[in-house]
Length: 155
Image (tube, rainbow, N blue to C red; front, side, top):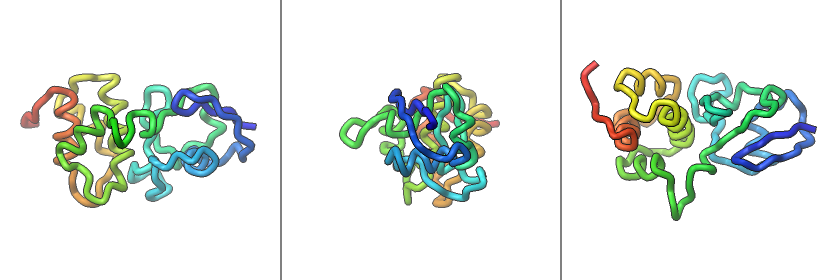
């Protein structure tokens, strides 16, 4: 049995300890926010927060979680009451196809929880591992800046 605390709820799952966290979230827990993108940790569609770090859940076996807390996009808000970052992404029309957005929001959440008002360099460096194939990166950054209360500066 594997014990996982996801979005504040403890679960006991009868799953293979080597199963990637992404599969545990999507299958037995039915949390579909994190997406399978590449399976190689190169796109970020599967990004979740483990304790206070943004991680690629496709690479992390559930046995490596231990007592750490896992948070997914489902913990941040709902369709009728989106969280601040979710609303900012809506305001800036940052989602085109939407596939990368949950991962982008989770990575941005991890940044803003540690650094509420990041510099432009910190913002860009932190968000770099996550890719948007629809090329809405500038809108994504604008949405994060809105929540951070910062403006773009030249680098």
